Image (cartoon, rainbow, N blue to C red; front, side, top):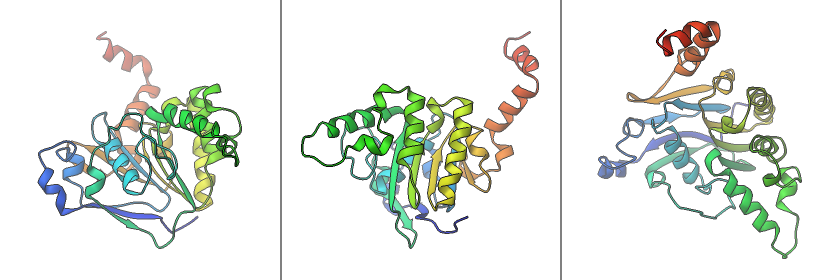
Length: 249
């Protein structure tokens, strides 16, 4: 398994202090950001909704040259610009090797990426169709989950950097397992992943770094100590007991 990273470390520049009382700099995850070491294979950001994990992930992606709404580095469309200026205040430490390729996936705006692919393929300037690198079938003619898997299977390759925001959003548990297998193949082919997720299936990937984002800021956490694992484990172990608690029986 590879031991090199395309993105080694992220830290906050001193310039961020001037915005400390503004969103998203006021979030604990940003305030506590010092030197965040990223795993050369897979790094997970986990935490409750509103914890700032997706905001941080987005800022890292934009700082690395990706379009804020997603896509590869040559995507430069904007349906509704809504990203923060956090990326301007991040110090990025890159590895000595450059990734061959990369992609930023935002589950909430992948529809827009799919539309952009169709618009580009309508351009009569010639050249190969973009959709060919996504499996050939228009993404809008597939289910949300199928289009996600087409991305993972056909578009993603080795020696690349992939930044994924909640990629499990459209995937059934079985498809999450398929993604986990594909992720491992890509890691073996020297690709690096940074993923914000709620999925205890995905974050079970072995030897990954897991950072929890919350009121205490951002800090490393073991898989079995994450709330996602504990809640799912307790529910599956005794669903009737959990339902009785939830329903006040």
